[in-house]
Amino acid sequence: MYIERVPNRNSPPAVLPRESFREDGKVGKRTLANLSKWPDDLVRGLRILLKGGVALKSMDDAFEILRARPHGHVAAVVGTARALGLERLLDRRPSRMRSLALAMIAARVLDPRSKLATARGLRSATQADTLGEELGARDATAEELYAAMDWLLRRQPRIERHLAARHVEDGSLVLCDLTSVYFEGAKCPLAKRGYSRDGRRGKLRIVFAPLCDREGRPVAAEVFEGNTADPGAVAARVERLTERFSLSRVVLAGDRGMLTDARIREDVEPAGLRWITALRAPRIRKLLSGGDLQLSILDTRDLAEISAPKLYPDERLVVCRNPPLAAERARKRKALLAATEAKLELVVRATTRENRPPRGTKDIAVRADRALRAHKVGKHFTITVTEDGFSYERDEARIAEETALDGIYVIRTNVPAGEMAPEEAVRAYKSLSRVERAFRSFKGVDLKVRPVHHRLEKRVRAHVFLRMLAYYVERHMRRALAPLLFDDDDPAAAEAARASPVAPARVSPAARAKAGGKRTPDGLPVHSFQTPLDDLATLTRNRVRPAVPGAMTADMLARPTPLQAKAFDLLGVRP
Image (spheres, rainbow, N blue to C red):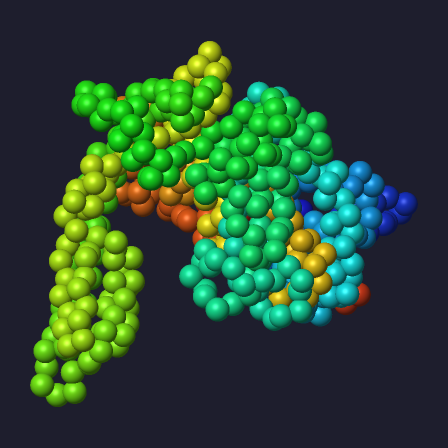
């Protein structure tokens, strides 16, 4: 029995169930009924039944979804890592260790967690997404992840050489800086008490220093003991550039705390490197008092090149004035002076009260010192302490001396004028903000390098190196997804809007429009970096099985939304 649709010239086609028969050696067919008035879906269902299919009450009964795994965000991160050649960068040959290392790198971008939690998410029974499936890292144990960290650390020198060859060449600018993160525990030999750069006093810490190209791409990362000061990392940076990367003509840019006179004289210049840094405030005052710097040269412009052959022979100095920065420093100083005076006034009142006033110069001096240290402007006050009294006044001469240098900074470099214009030297020094952006990503909500729980020195070093490689992937994704993010996707227009490199950074008209309307030109919502990853995670890979006895299971992807399709298109990745 079968169903035949017979066309009618001026009428709807006739739907006729028929059967075949044989009579006198000939094949014929007879019509059993007329189903022309049946709905099409009912006719289709009967045709399936006649072919041996199964009748279903609704389409909901057609398939059984056995498991849905978040997949879109994994496809985006893993696809980007592969497009960057990260797999071959780790190792040319596929292996379990390579898969586990790449899984940990991707996990730092997707959902930064401990190694134990990452291993739990890779298990088949408790998998959080399709990361283990995509990379062949299913059912990894925490011990395997630790072994993969050791495997990765042994390859760090080769990986960094390849990154440097890809992004740094002789004559280019290299950015260096360092920061610290607090450490949990007390067993690691790298963990020391030192200067807190993240406001967590009283904790052990480690120091790490990424090395970045001019655009802020990380090419190397070094970990130091927690009590290492900024200048202490310079020798290691120079060794990386000259010996490991075989570079001899790069320009090293570092802040005034890192590239000190001693480090320039003992580490940087003997290696033949060019450098760019800035002067500290006492050095600027010395230029001013010695007559090498005349502030009048900045009356009609915001930067000027000067020389000070006695203090800085064979070097160039670029003096800059930033009026918005000057106004902000003046405002902040005024507020801090007022706050400190309020605390000092409390000490004055305490010494004059009738009920148990403090007595003795030691007791009163301790109270006064606490007030002066509170807002770090105690140098601008002079105090008088007696056995039963206390008085203070502002040091107006010192305040005026500091005010004169508000908004003034001096770039110092040994790059010849023929190789770098003054404006370019200012831009190069300001490029250090890109390293600061990397620090915020390392330590903030994106990659979460802290807290550090590892005890072994090699694991701490591998932990930081994993974060560096994760930032390498994240940075590329940010730039690719910039049209969907609050990030400026037209940096050339933003730079063109600045009157000079000294002026505050601007955003492009396109970025301003996105921030104002919270919509892209395509009408899509604007995101921060993490929220489109969360949205992509809703694109699931579903394990389904047809509702037929003995049917095999299969994987089906959900249909991407317009936002998800746009994100994949920008990344050049297929889900």
